[in-house]
Length: 120
Image 1: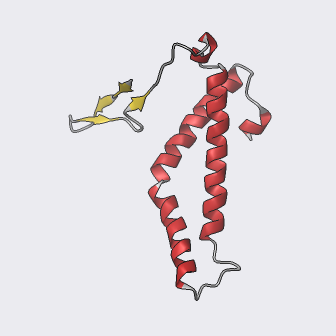
Image 2: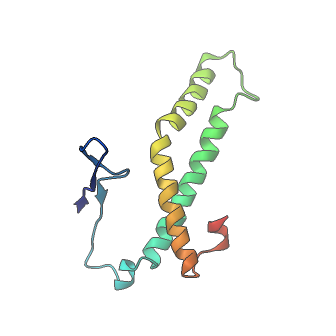
């Protein structure tokens, strides 16, 4: 399922909200609890999202640093440049994912089911 959410901007033009279109998949085989916002599927989404963001940060930070690298080697410099560009190019996507994870964690906290390791 694809859901497009539009709003009217200050110029009267209909534009998509950040992150739109939203996509959802359904399975008749999934347990009913998977449909709950505080169910196990959301918990898995939060955990995998946090791990994905953490890996991206660690990998690109390591790749973008020039410390202990031969900066006279063109291939090394291109690798550093690629990591910096990756951060720049994926910025909007990463910020959206962080915002979604933050709101999901707030909801989990309100229901008393957020793990301390996730909140930190």
